[in-house]
Image 1 (tube, rainbow, N blue to C red):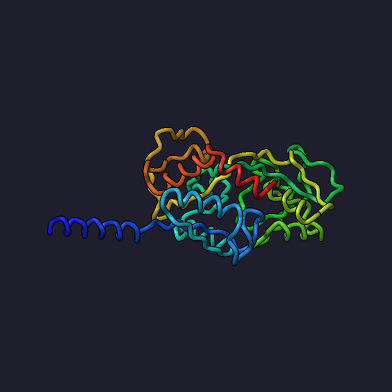
Image 2 (image 1 turned 60 degrees about the horizontal axis):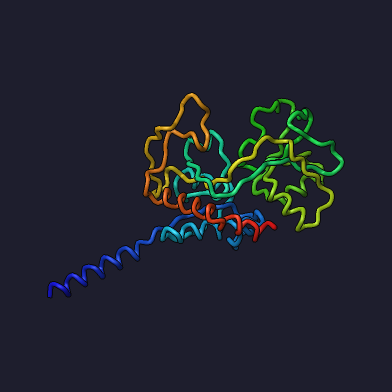
Amino acid sequence: MRLLLGCLVALCSYVTVASATTEIIMGYRTTAKMPYIHAEPSDDGFYFELYDEAAKRIGATLKVVRLPKLRVLHALEAGEIDFYPGFAFDEERAKYAYWVPNGTYQRDVAITLKGRPLMTQATSLDGLTQLVALGNPDYLVGRDTSQMDQLTVSELDVGRAMTFLRRGRADFYVYEEDTLRYFLKTEGSSDMMIHPQFVDRSSPSWAGFSRNSALFEGQENPAYDPNLPLAWDNMPMQLVPGSVIDEFQQALHQMEMEGWTQALYRKYFE
């Protein structure tokens, strides 16, 4: 009888754990960022394969929620979604986000119509108009933008950005180099020019987790240096070891060390 009771308790415990599988919610805008993610309603692409694999490795499931850009950022800040898959660091976002490297790297560049002189960090921005996606970070931190205009557009994907440039609505657009080159290659666009030295911004790519997420567990970071600027690797808080997001971070790191992430990257970009 005791043996039977013990088996029933063990079985009930197993069912409880199995039915309580952790769900990690990734939020993204409704438009495409190829080849990272298709436009809504399809979530296929590099992001889904990468983060779905990390979730599976820790016994969790990945759910994707698509919303307009500002709404998804507000949902991230409120903790209604757990993370945004490609989330550039800035101090405003640091009020509510925590950054986890995803095992890839990115460089930001400028793109213009062909015929413009090569733009570098020393290029004056006076009289130019920058095309900006609503909710994007400031790519020109430290530059003199006092005599520059900005055209801010909601729900901006690369294809739409190229249309604005072609119509003369803006002079340049700053975005991730790999995404821009992928678009130019797949669309056969020969009237555009990339300026690789315009922005001094090359860094790991991150998933941005909400510190208000129910999954987030943080503790004081003893390595934090208040005399240095805030950065993804200089935050007052760090993850609690063994927490869900910490395990997710470790899975992403292991995938990078195994070469899994780079193989996935080649599948989509090469």
